[in-house]
Image 1: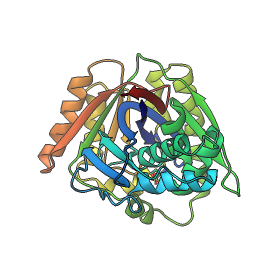
Image 2: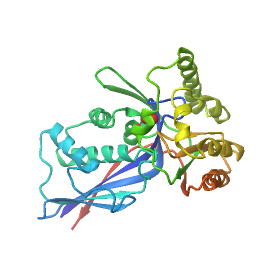
Image 3: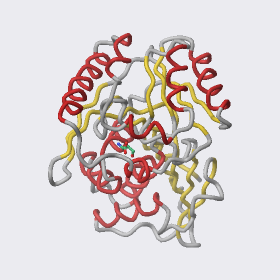
Image 4: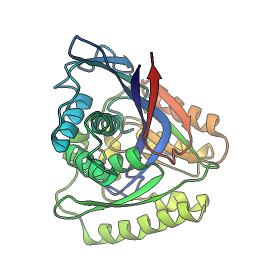
Length: 309
Ligand code: HSE
């Protein structure tokens, strides 16, 4: 008898308007990473779902493989010699929905399971943040809910999490346009105007209050941002118009998800119409898009062990 181990990791939406590099939330769309022991053949990696044929299956170059190796290094134990690692991907790639964090968190959790579980949740988050560069996707991918993260000079992360309500829907619309995070960070200024900083402090506090108090009518105000949105929206053709269309169609707020190109709208009703309104704008600028109507994932990443004969 052997055991298959599967790690299920949610998509995430980082920033949430005014919470640049600090806020993130987990969504009910999941990638899975599983391990099946074999008697021979070494360690191999298979990609199914999104990215099949595009994502490398070379274990040492694949992000999941790299995260598994990192877990093994931290735990001071070797990964099993033989086995198949299967990635089943549903999170759109390079679209601002946390696909790379899902890979890192999935790989660290699976690697930790296979090398003695030496790391606790805090260490896994620390390693994920080091690999990602910032915690705003990694924290919700691991912990679920709405996460508010701060990092100290040594990159040590402290997180508060808050479970989001089932009544709130998240409509993600991903246009057929990749935006690399590095490119979306390259357009940001090196310094920021004092008034812009004060504006964001006020708005992010207001935004978190709106989520916690379930005052979804206030989300639109809290989402306003002067740190990244003005520089990044131009990277998404039709982006500004699609955000306006979402609100016109009944969304209580809408913003860029992570560094884009996905847009995320928040709603308590009329989800299909909101998605359609946003997709119509992308279509008008020649971009196909995929959408998801999601709820919050408040549990974060899950590990499932199944006995196999
Ligand atoms: N906070 C990050 C950014 C998220 O907006 O650049 C993307 O990794």
